[in-house]
Image (cartoon, rainbow, N blue to C red; front, side):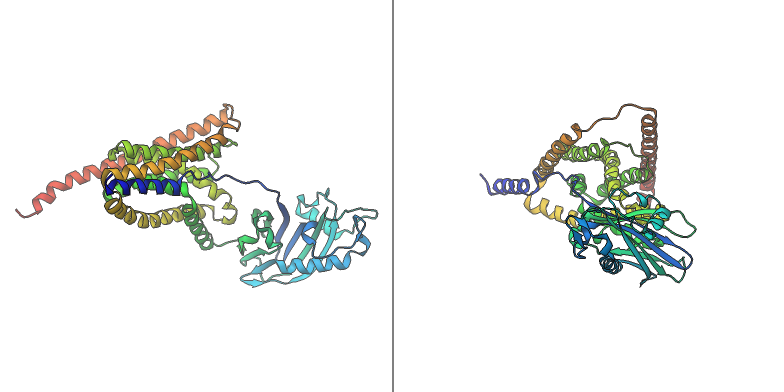
Length: 443
């Protein structure tokens, strides 16, 4: 066997060991703890009304008689808990940390439902525990009401939690933010979220979502592998630009539509999208192997881009809570971040690919081997994700579902028609410019 073929076989074996079969990522479900809170802004005061599960207060040493909390002697421990709470959940105004001007708290039964509404929660915290109440250790809540003096209600407010940081993302702080004169908003943060703006400015929202988009594309190995499959056989920048532009326009279309709640609903759709993304990698890799028609590759890239846009939207939906009143700015910023990350990846990927195809895997054989490695990985992802998809219940046809489907079909046809018209105009302009260019050139 020649040295060239030994090198090719070694490269293929190494690639298979490196990329496949990689385990498909899925959402993990674990026992979680949740702290519920209201943050209310008034003309001269801010209020934090919060409920913590008692198992988070093990360092406070609440008095216990047998298995029951000694409620009659619990006040000193409650005061220590309030002081710790003021240190570990911090509100800031225009970057200045606020110090509570007053703090009250009480213990509550696990069956209490006072925190469904802000007014009920405030009234409940102010009431003493009813005589004869029995609360078992680690079963129940600490309810607290902290009041802060503020300069003005239009300031920029932020919040941060460091309660039980060892629990990481398993301990969540669910906040209902109620600014003065505006609609209330909800968000969920953890100790890993850092300092979070409750009412971000448009440029704060934009910067945050650009960074989120970059992080999302760089951590999405399936999206990056599909991008690699798109450009493996590309021979020039013109081909790369046309293909990547079609992919970008298509995934932007479904990403924005999904953010406005126009994506199909149901437990079946996320695993369907993940399976389709894996299938797109397999298809594109196989097309590279059997032969590429660049005249229609941009169309195939656009069609699969629609599917990848739904995948991008899952990384966006859980973070739209941080957009504040700047939903549209945040959407476009997230998409911009994805494009920046995509260009950064291409800036590294294309030179590396050029070197690899020239010195290690030259010619047509290199395209086949690289595409086979990608197909091998995508196939395993498709099987694993398809197994999950097979186990979910598929939706029954309904009027609402058919309306959503019709909307997407219309939108896809509209975008495809627009892209095709632009491509035709570009070709016509290019052809019309050639005679003028030839006349301008010297004989």
